[in-house]
Image 1 (tube, rainbow, N blue to C red):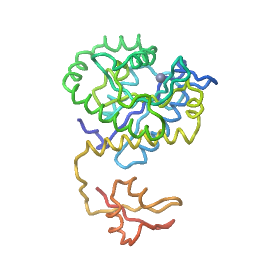
Image 2: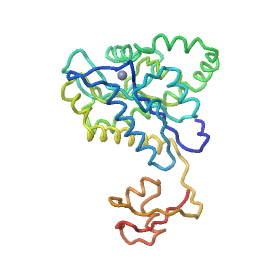
Image 3: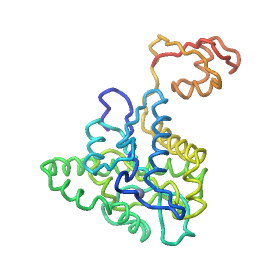
Image 4: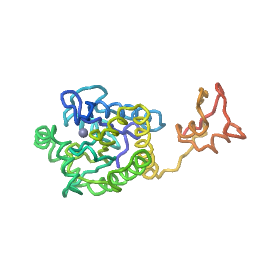
Length: 291
Ligand SMILES: [Zn+2]
């Protein structure tokens, strides 16, 4: 995989639909485009708080973004991961659960996956085709061929981690990662997945999707899955420079949070700061080792 120019791990978060395209609409009239944007913003905040990671959103307002723009965000920023965030819908309002999809080039993993891909692709059809006709077509297909199998392996690993974390928040529609021919994932040669948070067509899940605490739980689940993936695929052991930066403890901080945020083990933080326990107090100045 290519390293981001900045040396950071860049995650593109693609809130599905937007503007004239509402996506699916729930029984009480809640729009998919709105809840997926809210969850995407929460996910983006979590990623941006994590040292060494940076989030880029394909849209941060209720705006229609065409496929080309969504893909260019990922290519231009030399991103490491691409996550498209959606809510599922089914004509049968009893169908519920979360799922995670990766691109399949050889057909959908199930009839349901094929149906969902068709729905999510509906607004991309025309744009998708023109995208593939453009002059970058050859370059893109070469890149896809070169990296296809390892990218799909990594996409699967990413999706599996995220699915596992989401399964702790909501029932899963199926136990495994699904695959289908999603246009938005098609031109990407970085690990990518499409997340269906829950079914907006299911009355109880529609309600949950619009709730702040549920949105936060889901954003955290995806974030944890991304972190799991990041740890698994970033084999470099940390090398400390011997220098430190300063962090002033704020209300509500715990040492384990500071440890997570800066990716510094608790034991290391304690040692550098001569702490005997994990207790910290507001206003305390902590030394944070620089990697
Ligand atoms: Zn969607």
